[in-house]
Length: 169
Image (cartoon, rainbow, N blue to C red; front, side, top):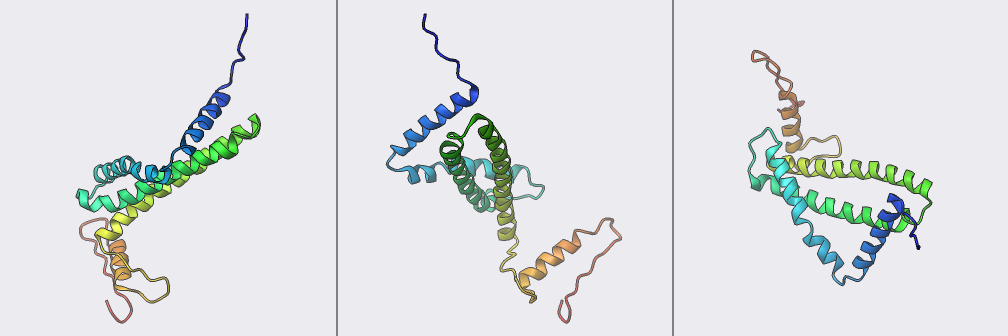
């Protein structure tokens, strides 16, 4: 009776990743496939930005940030897949396990940053909060952003916050 050795979950995962990598390497239009795969994540980001926002926003207002986040998410998936297939799959079991945990934490962090950049892009475009200054001179967009930030501190109806900027307001 011939018995096949049982493979651990990590070994099976690595074999699947290597097979998927070989399949992708044989594709002629891999960058084109990456770009066409951005539509589904962009749709999910648009739905999230539209439904999970307290402000009343339109689909048109959420699409720029959703497209940016969708492209970023797809690039993050491609980069993560490449790193796992090329770096982690060739490491030992102990180091591979630690690398997967640390890599997953980094991947979650970068995914959250991508979602945040998409949401901030929508706010900046909707309220025309650009160009912002990087030096001490305030632009009109800086004044609007600072004024809106200060007005959010009004907690009760009789409370009022006034904002002035040096010699001009």
